[in-house]
Length: 252
Ligand SMILES: *[C@@H]1O[C@H](CO)[C@@H](O)[C@H](O)[C@H]1NC(C)=O
Image 1: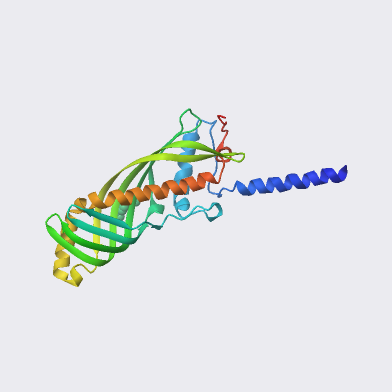
Image 2: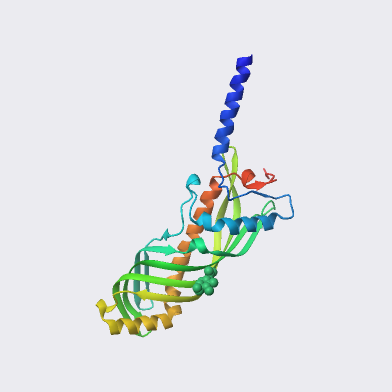
């Protein structure tokens, strides 16, 4: 009898360790209590504090770093200009500041709204051939695009996924919108190094940055949102709602 109970203690301890292992949360994330009036403020504080760290990844949870982020190649073919970026890399997500946060958790329809403001830079090899408005642009080489004060707002339904005994959040069908304050382009090796032509075109491109960004921003922002949502969902998939939100009562 004594042996048996000892065995139970061992099994219980093992199961407990196993469960604790699966429920890993980085120490900078402290679950907020849904049953307190400070819940929303607590979530906001948590996000402000953990955003820069979260963006650098949580290896223990398989959440990848998103600063820098490798984007898919970008190919634009429109309004008389062919422009491609090979192996573009995006820098700056870890310095994003939180401009808006709305979470409705524990209500009939659960939603998540996130507003971020950030300065981003995009590096990669560009290939350009065509015109910006009236001016020809042609070249191939390294590029640096700095985008200042990008506002991105992501609105998403917060759905639940059941897996095993756990229940997890998942952002589903996110919508987004964005605004950009300004952009500067630096394309190296325009016109095979013809300095005068290159300077004229670069100056013109920078004065008319919106023209170029009308084509370039949509595919870039789409990938940024996808990257952010994917990272958040990876995080959500590794920690149950019960562990993430104190005092949460399952609707099931
Ligand atoms: C972006 O950079 C500008 C200029 O350095 C700075 O004034 C602004 O506060 C930055 N924005 C963000 C969201 O960090």
